[in-house]
Image (cartoon, rainbow, N blue to C red; front, side, top):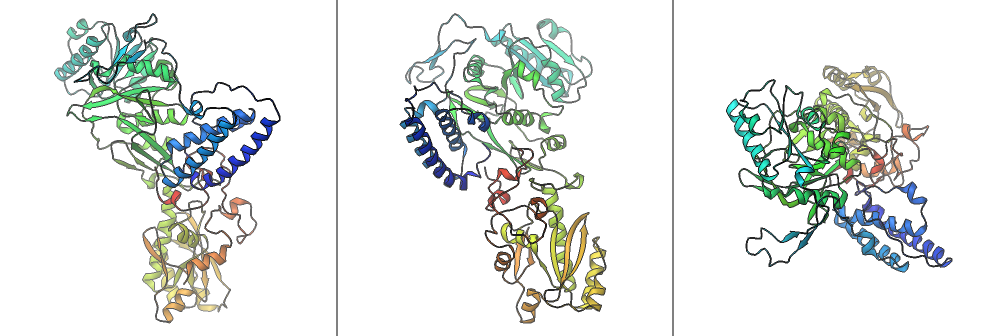
Length: 610
């Protein structure tokens, strides 16, 4: 649930809301005959369907609420939020007890019998001693189906280095699969235009389908292999160099059917002996994507994951309906596929007792994430292998819209323009200060407000010679601004009067106002340095007491957030802002929707929290 940050403050009000619900539910139940305890769905909802919940009776609403809070508790990582949720769960558990519902039955996942694989029994901790190659024993059953009839193996080989190495690679790979599953179905795509090895290998493995082609990408190659798959499941053998009994495909098929997940993988053993669980959680928020190795929940000794790093099994039906993007693995192929699973509310697991033998995992230089970043609107990514991806802002068209946070590239343009202007102020000895929304952003967040539509600066309008130097410096720096020097030289301003200009940096407009009296000027005249605030890494002039200035300018609860007055429907640039609220997003749940965040605090906009 991606509202983790909202819960920090929201959990406080949630407890009050729960008490209200308790009073409501208790009153309603007391007016009627005590209902029988109903069987509850075992699967925790990934997304709470509020509209559907409203149609249920009070008891079911309470159970749905309990599941949602319990799910949030599992996935939240902030200690304060976790404490609030723990208290909320305690209240809800008491409420469930009052209506004869066992909380454990509400929260506990439940499984069904696998359709094709016999069940297993744990024989105890002494059974497999001392090597523990066994411990769980498969039952006998009448419905068991050999895994070779259930799973088709697919593999992509990119740009083989030579005929001999290709033959060796294929022979070892196919032989290992045939050794484990003699009648297995194998499909391999090789990124060369024609066959370059002898027909001996084809005679040795007649049932293996080999496709030779100059594929556009790994994704397109895998899609071509999937088209004619007839089995219910597919093993995608990314990085896998051989199959052994360590992989325990029966175990994986049993769990994908029993727990009803979309994909299931195992742990990885690299050629260098390094072992990894290969289970990652992902956070996609505010133009940033971050992967973190680890898990929040387990079941049947398997870990729930947003992203599986190694080979995995999924259903052929799902893979045909949700094909791979036409990109390569090093350009986000699997990150994209698993993100689509996660955002659709589906789940994936890794069962680490199943282990795949894979090539050494390395970070490949020269990767091109442009197609991935454009599709997912990601400007900065912390990837599973520990490397980072950043988009080139010079290639991005920037814009702003109500209810949406500015992109990092838009923020950079505004910030670069502000800092450039302020440097020119300093170089020419002109007194300048941040003001209005830009000053507010500096005080609250240490940068431009992520929902602003312009920038606001003020300068001293009393010195004719400095105004001329300043104007020429701005023009030379590539900024577009009307000549304000005549206003400085020919017009006298009183306190409260101002000269208003527009200034443009890379097409983005700012309000640029001249004032006769400024705090920084008065401080300098008294032998003091101007007050400066750290703004996106640079110390910039502000009013003498910027906290006081902004409190008096914006009024009550100004540290809580509100979008630009032009977006909120105000007719004046000096309204009494209604804070602590963002406009309802037109694309609910989108990563850049402001209403996904608490409309208070600076952490959501300064730190990428897990």
